[in-house]
Image 1: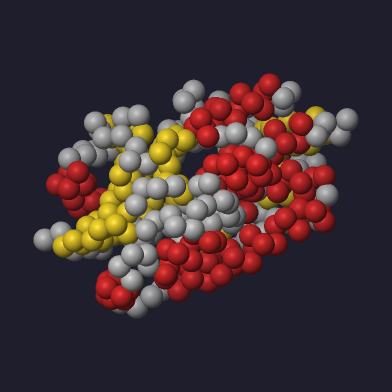
Image 2: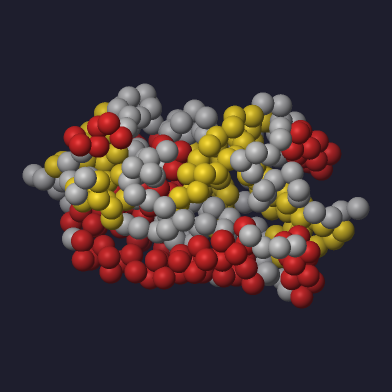
Length: 355
């Protein structure tokens, strides 16, 4: 029986572990935290994602549908406008240590397949020399290991907040000058989680402005935030080498996610399957990887343009006037998310002035 080591017990690491265990490998998953569910600074959290659950099940070999709830409402506060999106084919899922989370669901499947877990085992630059070659690295971008794994990246600052609400299965997105990109809120089972993208030197007053707008528009009260410094890969890659040792990358740290609006759940699930294939056959994994890579590279270029776009607010508002049903940028994004989605996701149902 061949041994395989996986570093990181997030979604991609767990999917890899399950698939390899089913192929007869002896799998050990090393996790930094003392339990399943990732960093307490990031989770529990709620994530909205467009996903084709049946196609995802067929590809990764795991039925994850029990962990997803259909989205009931999706509103975007886009500067002076309120945009309502069609909620068809959109879902919310919970991440973190809760028994209701997608992480815990996959953890139980992995445990039943005989996967061995070693908790409180952080991966650091100092112990890279002890990692067996062809191990899977799925530590997530907030592990700050991009530099040591030779992954091109940008530093990314965002605030994570929590609240409670009577709403359920709802997603809210806010575009305005208080965020470098946008503020994002998802709600499921009474848990509200938010992530606001910030420029590296953006003042704290911006979060206060965001809190005020959310309170006024949706009646949700945020009062406490965790500030995270993250690494944002600017390149997609399946393999890397550290000190001449070949390693396999999976999940967000491999750049296998939607770079524009950061839909990451789909990419994590699919990436985990491809990383498992890479252990079995490098050639087969590269063949599976190629179609995703072609589309993702286009979106990384579009994301670079979007982040540096002059007069971004004005340009997007003009596009909304010309394409009131679905912005081309959204349509392109649906086709590039590294997972399985429905092409008609994120259609605009209604748009009205906020003021």
